[in-house]
Length: 235
View 1 (tube, rainbow, N blue to C red):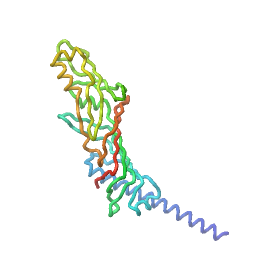
View 2: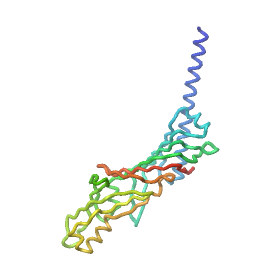
View 3: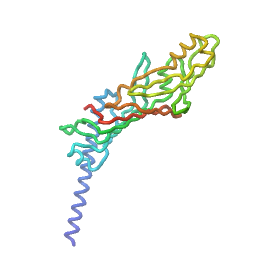
């Protein structure tokens, strides 16, 4: 009986050591992956990387990870001299294949992502004294309230329009749904308002070949989801 107790104690201790070793290894791999993602994506800050699944060492031996999650922080993109800042960008990679050196990521069978943009950043990107705020959804479209700057246009004041935000590929589009009649009657007004309300931005730093597929307006900003299959990952 005593020998059995000793044997069980050794097994337990060995098991604990394996778990500790496994967690140390996964922590090291997460740090390495974070550094490689930062350099390959040109990020200003090192992202937070979390490798899921246990045991990690068994996954490494098979050169395949169940899931890798990355919080990439913010990013910016410019169009027509106006910069749109993405407040938060996250991605989840599933069934990840490692390279032959066991330290590089080759691809993921599938991936999902999410980007968050605040109304303050949308307002700044629109420029020219424009204000953009929450307007909910209508007929399945995610909408925003746009208050253009028409202070320099005679006979027009307190103008407000509703705009729709759509996504396609790596592109985010903002467009006024309809210009009010009092503005449409003035060519200068309609042109000025459209220049403030209609914009296109490309999110060129999306990891792999993720494509934007849905946008939802919320009270604190817009949430954009992305997805992809057979995603190629740099580094």
